[in-house]
Image (cartoon, rainbow, N blue to C red):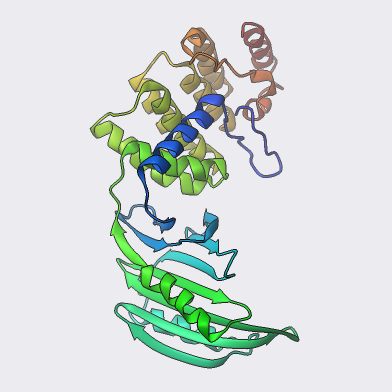
Length: 335
């Protein structure tokens, strides 16, 4: 599509225009101004109306991502105490045994590649807990301690891991602070807050993860519109392209079609449909939507402008077609 190109990673490069970055920036400022609570980590699975929350005062969240198999993962580290915390959410498959939490902990303790010591199991409320020490790794003295806390909730495996090298007994307070802070909370967010969360993932190129909050925001807007036009354009645009980037062209098409149904004069929805059909190798529809995009170019957001179809990765595959190439050249000159 447009501008940011990651040909080594993405077949369909995402848009990154000034209005998107500005919207993310403004929403971030509003979020920080209104939320005086300590730094937190929140992780949720697609389709769930709850999330797992950790209080992470003193920590820096390094990773929030969606794995290829759909698992959600977060990793944070306290640069002062060197305590590390990771959280994983995994949807359970049909027939998953009810005692899988304890089973998974026992399997970890029996990992032959790790020479673990002082293995202890316990239970704290709904949590199954395991801890162990590991004095050495690959011949190096590390004095590593790990505590795992897991829980089955709403057909989901919730797994928290807190660890530290060069462990001392005084560090137990640090470990317990993280573990005791873990809780499950309902997710009730505005469409603006959801766009904020989604846009962070989008800018990190976690497009699969961004789809969830973008989709939730769009559903809220369908029921009770709150967004101004510029941010609503960003919502539909980025959701559609996130689908396109992960290869779900049908969902991308449906998203842009919805955008057109609500605002049939916004040019970038037509442009994105042209790119979608180009990915489908449909030169006729790609041409038709490209013409419509430039027919409405005057309705682009001020400062946004129209992309150059001759340099768009999604459209390049059609440039071997003479008629399409001539069309792209003509439209590019009218930008």
